Every structure is written in C-alpha cells, then in structure tokens.
Amino acid sequence: MSDSSRKMDADRLLSFSDDLIQVLKNRKDINALMRSLDDAKKLRSSADAELSDLHDQLNSYQKRINACKQNIEEAETEVVADAELDRLQVSVEERKGTLMKAEKDEMRQQKKLSMYASVTNIIPDLVDKTRISGQIVDRDKKMVEKFDFDPTKTSAVEICSTLWKLMDL
Image 1: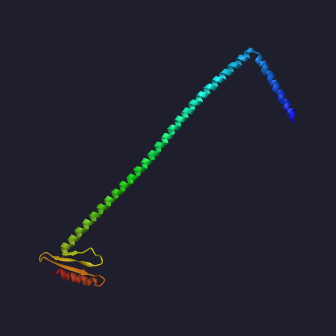
Image 2: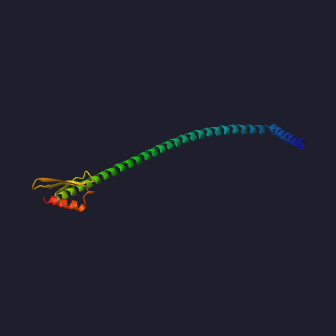
Image 3: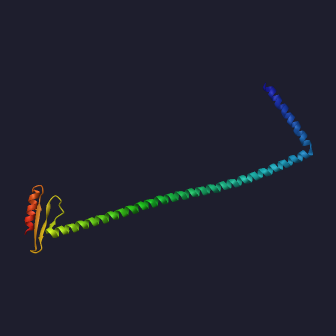
C-alpha cells in the first residue's frame, strides 16, 4: 500500500510540475512572479528592520525597568532607614520623657522630705533601707541627735515612742 501512496504523491508532484512549467512559459506570469519575489524580499527586509527596532526598544525598556527596580530598592532602603531613624528618635524622646519624669519625681520626693524635716525636725538616713536611722535637728539649741534602730529587733511602737521622746529635746 505504501507503493501506491508514493505513486499517487509522485503523480501529484508531476502534475504540479507540469502546471508550474505552463505558468512559467507565459512571460507575463514570470514578470508577476519576479515582482512578487522582489516584494517578498522588500517585505522581509522591512520585517527584519522592524524586528531590529523592536529588539532595541525592548532592550531600552528592560534597562528602564532595571533602573526603576534599583530606584525602588533604594527608596525601600531609605524608607527602612527613615523608619529606623524615626524609631530611634522616638526612643530618645521616650528616654528624655522618662528622665524628666524621674527628675520631677526626685524633686517632688526631695521637697516632701524637706517638708517632713521642717515639720518633725527629723532628717532620715535613706542609704540603708534595712535600718531606721537619721538625725533629729534642733535649730534653736543647735543640737543634732542621731538615732539608729533595727526593725527586726525593735518594735514599731518602741521606735515611735523613742523618736517622740528624742524630738522633745
């Protein structure tokens, strides 16, 4: 069967060849074919030129895209750096606020202590938190009486009574 299909293909090919020879015998057809061939060459040349232009444009756009990507990366880096700087500034401002609050609290405590000392004439010693100690000052008599109690050995009532007695200097 393959021989018969080959014979049919060969017959068709011979038929096309005969038709082509008939077409080429006519001078008009040869000129038309030559013009068509020239037009095809021009079309091919024009297509090649456009393809080259498109490749150039594509390369140009790719360069622009890469430049934009780089700008975006730089902007993101700058945003991250700005955010970090803002965070640090907030942190510094928070620390300043905390420091100012601590200074205010310390000043308030000093004023309280000064007021208590003015009223009671007692200046406590706040260095050792485990002991109750300090000085009782009598400005009129220009005397200073020191006191020191161990709260584990002396009751709060005894300490209070002793301090009242010392204040009556």
